[in-house]
Length: 371
Image (cartoon, rainbow, N blue to C red; front, side, top):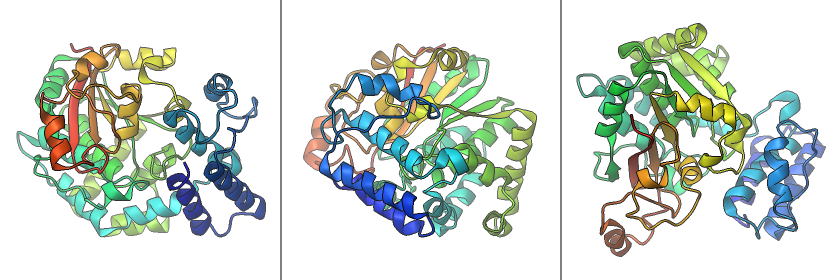
């Protein structure tokens, strides 16, 4: 909160030079408060989705930006940014310039075309592998992003893809994605979703945030722009794409229109609550899922309570509360981990002291309530 998030706010100022003076002053004041460890600000009870936060803030009287639980304050920082930038008024995404640059990169184009080219009897298993390492492309975390998406699977510390495919074959209902980053990761999420919809006739639901967060976290506009955008930048992106990639986009756009692909924004995903504290309406919906694919490091932390479990504690035991099969696809950017084979963590501690946080390694961990 003293260095990394203030630097992100400085980038917001640099990338949005046309923000009004009061908006720029609000962003700068938020940055300074984080650096100083000031007391957490109050939230207007009449503000959109304030109910997600009011109880949480009441439970932390006198807490400051550098003197409270990390998962709460980092999420609240982005809520405060949405407020000071007027997101609820004009829906302007302060991170849009950074997201668009990611979509226009050569790395994004290569990842899209490589994913579209995946075919054959093992296509679903290979798409899951590509999708987990796409989580490296986190625009708020350079150490992970700089590693790129390529992997032969040797950095996958837990590989429960076969078990997830069994759950897909056994269950009914939709596949639910709890989405993380826009850009390359969302693109590979969508290529995987297209395979499920077109090849397996499985409906897909995408759970997304209601306001921008963590620089690249996906909101509804990101999905709709990628699939149905018609502005100059969208036309430039798709004008040079392969016929296969364009066909996949068109198929997903049709699925979005006819309901086989559903977008489900919810303020819960912007809040600090653990996954076992799902709102009732989300719990009911996810309980009916054939499989829930939970993307990214922050959502993994939400699933395990952002706690330091013994690394060989079974992920299924930690997430037994969840009402459906849960497949966590995550590259490691924080200390918490569960479900590793015995002896793996001590070995990695010797080989690479930053293995938990540098984004190189990943897990595809199956937990929750299996069918």
